[in-house]
Length: 283
Ligand code: ZN
Image (cartoon, rainbow, N blue to C red):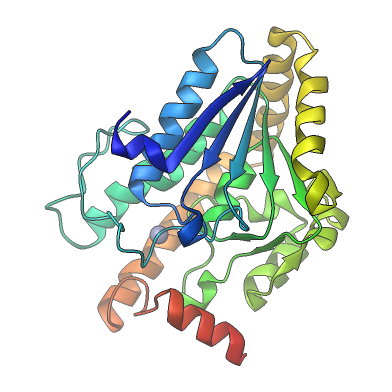
């Protein structure tokens, strides 16, 4: 297996493929290597006739702290074989062109591609599920969280109106989405359950067993029925404007990146994980 695959583990347990993000030392921050390894794992699970349901998990104490904006293996400057879009490589391009090409591929494009996998996906969420971590949980059809899980999208602190896959007003009621964005506060698992963003909240020690039991129940349904039921609900979300809404917000998102690049240190307003944490603690 290539080095790129080691950041994601793949295992099959009967009819369930368990795909596990495996950078626990960085709270499963997603670099491009992880994104493409996830894509490879999902493709494998989608193609495997024995697999009926896919579980997405994170190794360690946290599901995912978001996109990699500060680990030693941050690889936003590298080229990868693109899969989700026909945008040209971002490497060697400047300004908004580079950012738009890259994020169309690795963020919005990949998330949309994964949302359309014709097999049910269950996110198994513990600990932190922040910003880019939300995107991964939201592309899954069901979300099961442990009691210690929390969700947040603090990127408004960077002057950016939410992460690239802007599912916020579909994942939760619009007024709650505004509060979620305006404050950047952590939404505890129980609150996420109350607003309908997660399906179940379970004790941490029961998380894996409960997710696998749910996956087994779903797996008992016929494959075609599951694929069509998933597509039916996804289509309903898109008829409620989700697809077009995301496209329009993606433009605002890139306006924010460009504004930051023009008026501050960089497209993230000079923020890194440390300054984001300090800003959160000081508020
Ligand atoms: Zn972005």
